Image (tube, rainbow, N blue to C red; front, side):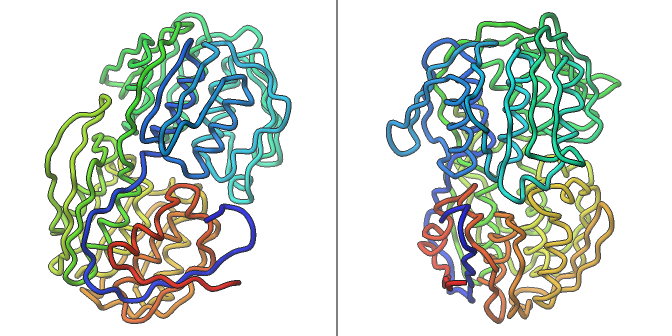
Length: 450
């Protein structure tokens, strides 16, 4: 699949029991960070299991534009020869980050404390997303940003010639904002401090420490306080990227709602700041178990077994859990449509500013499929119709959002009538093997030319 070009509709119809092993791709969040920190190290970083979706490939191309030597050795195997902290060269052309909000925001942070200028753009979805939440704290280091109205791409960032360390309280839970500030802090003298009221995914802190940066994390009355000592010499690493829990969510959830299914998803990263969906599903009554727990590359990992779960009940998801599963609410909404009772999802306003307005997109599509959905500014409630009870039969708009597309295709696998998405091409940004992987388990997809 390509993230660019003409839209390609795809439909999913009711599947026979799903079975087999779903080897999902590497973790997207960790893949982005491995490339960026490899580029900021001195020497050769070797990466295995890298997600080769379009989002991550765009970040690899960006690191080359900033002067790092990034080479693809084979499937999932990459090597990065970095330029060191403060060693980024000024790109000769515009940096196109495609669909990736994570990529563009982290790269802006990584270059913002160096005396260089870079211009960023992306696809239509990314150009509609606000960048002010990142450029505002980067301005505290001395960087300047010039973009379209509303702080949107295309945007030119002028890095700080004499960066200063920053103390910054993140106003909304956002791993992207936190990570951008920490990456900018690498080339600032002294200590950069980031304060989170609610913990978000901590891959950046873990990986910074692995590369040799001095990072101290403490829980205080202010919240979670991260202190980074600037201007380290980062040491190159060998990184094995665990499989992505956000991608695993799709075969796992499809197995829970398709009658008779039994699917194993091996080697999934279970960082506690990312595993909220699986905790929520178990609370709903899902037949989901962890097998062979272990640690790989400093991250907790296990194999997940998911079986058809006809007894799932709606619950109220604790709002404080939202940061640990923010990307998984679309597929959770689909599961909720096949459960009994109401699933209430509060504290999810962040979904309004993702690749699409995910609350609105899921509510509209599920209603078209016959579900009862209510929504507010930062909440959504789905009243389930029980196992096999969703009528389906609708065409759902994806709004260039990969997770919306995959969620509705999973819905079609258990609905009474096929569900169609208007464009499956965005799936390539995060899960390029979604179609063959799911078909290998028993999904029945059909493409149609637009």
